[in-house]
Each structure stands twice: as C-alpha cells, then as structure tokens.
Image (cartoon, rainbow, N blue to C red; front, side, top):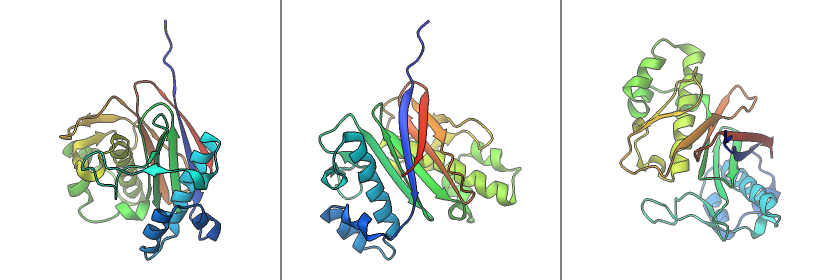
Length: 231
C-alpha cells in the first residue's frame, strides 16, 4: 500500500502594524499602492509579511524579492494573484482583515489564504450574494454570534478556494460550494465557468483570535499538512 505524500503549506500571521520598517521592505509599486489607501497599515503589513516569508523560504533578503501580478483571467497587472518572479515552484497568497495579516506559502501547488473579521460578514443580504441554496439551508438553524462566526467561516473557505484557483471574484462565490462550519473543511462543488486545475485541499486556520476566522486552500491531490506560525 502506497501512502499519500502530504502537501506542505506554511501560514504566517501577524498583527497589523504601522512600523516604518515594514514600509521599507516594499518595492516602489507597493509603496505607491499603499500611499493611495486611506489606512495603509494593513496593506503594508501583509505585503511586508509576504516578502519576509518568501525571503526566508528562498534564503534571500525580503526587499530583493520580485513579484509578477498578472491576472490569470484578464491579463491585467493591477490585481492578479502574486507570483514569485523566477521561482515558478513556489506558490503564495496573502490576506488581511481587521487587525490581522496572513500569508500562505507552498511548494506543492497553487495556494490561497483568506482571513475574515466576523463583523465583515454580518450584513443583510449576505446569503443572497454569497451562498448557494444548500449552504443557506445549513445555516438556517443558527443565530446570533454562532451565525456570525459560521458565515465568516464559510466565506473564508470560499475565498481561499477562489484565491487558490487564481480567479478570485471573477467567479460568483455562490458557485463555489463548501462544507458547513460544523463539518470538516472541503470543497463540495465547483460550478464556475472557469475550470479548476485540479483537486482542492481545504483547511481552517486556527488563529486563537475570537474576532477573526481564516482558511487556506491548495490545488493538490494529497492530504494537507498545515503549519501556522506567528510572523
């Protein structure tokens, strides 16, 4: 009997910070994008964390890392998933919400990570714009804080799959069906017009923070071995 090889995924997280040293790690394009934001600290923290994580992985200085951000769907260089230039075998993703920033890295397949603050999913119409009918039914019996957390968790799972695929919200999230919050994380069905490049492994990311939830997905056939570290 041949045992499956685990897919290795490393997730780094840290609190959002306005430390000027983080800004110094960014390239000129990232600094310009940060400057256009009313509250740049989350963007700066996440991108500095990405550079730090990639630098450690490759054994190079973070500020020397170069990224290609070409969108896989439309070809734009403004909003595509980041790829490490010159290292096609290293897959990365980043996310930020509230006061947390997360980065995922893997050498085994396209990866996507998403963190959500509970309040961001607490709005009227969430079900209509986000959930398939099957998913709505799974959350019907919940209310209050339990419902808020369930919505955020389901959304994080969906978003991580969409990021791993490289399509992002070009695909309607209602067409990405995931398991409910009381079930093991998994992609149940992909109904998007753009096909997936392979099977999906999905996991929740435990942050020890009651105000946030997170998930990570990787396009790979084998079980996922997840390491979560404070960056």
